[in-house]
Image 1 (tube, one colour):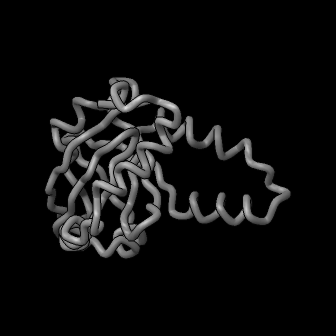
Image 2 (tube, one colour):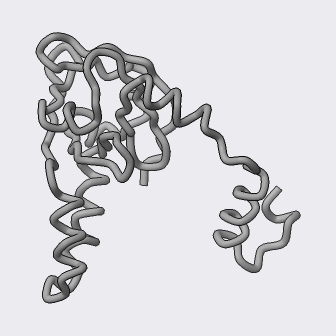
Image 3 (tube, helix red, strand yellow):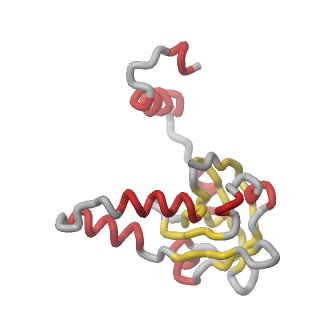
Length: 158
């Protein structure tokens, strides 16, 4: 699993192409460096996965029981708009117009990389998201990390 990180402000050109930042590209394993999959994110953003990460997610999705309506609904919504991206010789990728419309992206965007994904945000939406910090981030962190580290001692975490 990749451990991507960083925030990158980018501009989209008139044809819908975005330059993959060099610092981000260096973090992606060589075998997945030029091929990605983009789809709709859970919030109003797009999510780009290196192809090897997308393949792992697809394997998990293919284990769902598709006789269950909830599973079919989730599968359809998650895969809706999923598109393979290839970097061109200049290190740019082309974002599909329907996905740009979904995320409200016109010219300026932010690539926010974490874990195994790169979220693509309209710059203004992303800045609003970050200024709308939870009232008590410390309590949120404690709640999330206690669930994650259930049973771990505090000294093991810090």
